[in-house]
Image: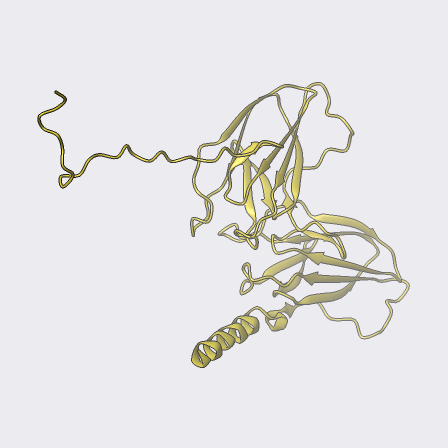
Length: 262
């Protein structure tokens, strides 16, 4: 028992070392003053600590400027001209990081702006609770227009594969990467939805047929996906599978009345 405990502790320490922010490499110079000067804006970017792809670095860009490679739990601090910052994670060949539009925000001289990047590659203001990364734009109106359909998809909170995000598709359209307990909201053309979870290399999600649903313009459709990657209408519960026991047959050793009734 003591040997197993020591082995588990050694594995944990090794994983922590590999996933630490020591792998962060910043290309832009770091500020040398406590406060930014009036003609410069200071940007802080922190990456969440997570075991998902913790050994992989994120290539961070501010517009066309390469900031550096950011490791899990690491952070960048740099200064730039006032104007509009456009932070993004450059997608990798294996699509590990989401190819999402840049995270843009106005910056003023003499101010500091704190941001964070989630394990799915989504950049947001520091302190935001959502860690999912939606590729499609979220609706800006309370109700969908008459020629559009609004889809709401919520992922149930569960311990199964909680640390893994789900790559959600509507037909061939990539919606985004959905974390446990969070949701996506997007709009599409009327017709038939075909929601699927893309199967991962380690087969965490089972390759199931698409969840097809006829949708009409001007309406909102709420759905959810559970931890196993099964879609359903919001509020619907999966019916339990009841296995019927086969009818018992008399064994060869059981005596029978061969003569039958008299």
